[in-house]
Length: 238
Image (cartoon, rainbow, N blue to C red; front, top):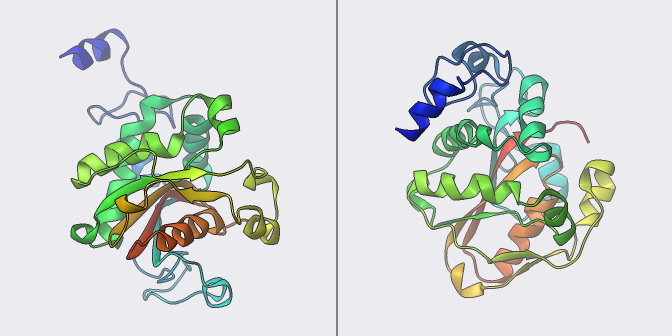
């Protein structure tokens, strides 16, 4: 009821086009939703989820054959391009938290399309550094992971993964630097929470997959049986 009153006083407008929203409780209209660059459910790398244009079957990409990421599987909801990039940056850097439900919609759809949700035991988020937490006041991945876990009917325990130090910002680095920058920067505070379990780790943007691979390595070292990874957006530019 309170939300309905707010909608009357401050009508929702589409984050992309600025017109009135025709989807209850959301901030992206149906037209703009249909134009977002969603990652296809077929024609993706079996390991990292990287899409390849024109393919209708899954494959294993050259990067995964070369670098062998430590996670078992990964998938992404959107390509980091156009309106998707603008929305994610607004959510991540400009506190547009009203986009959360729309973004979690995208994550949930990708999770159900690419994973056997029944096999997931718990959902975790990529941890922020203390510097990033201080700068933003919140952890974007955690804001997305908690409601996603509720929708999937899975626990999302806090304080399992932590950052052990402050690496350089990945966005400012090249591909080779990204892979070395995150080594040794993630730890598991509660090994008992993950031992013998299938863990889904949620990230906001995946580029090389280095951060998610480091999270997976530590989770497996702590006893996790499998680590699957899900990102809101996939950047194909390194």
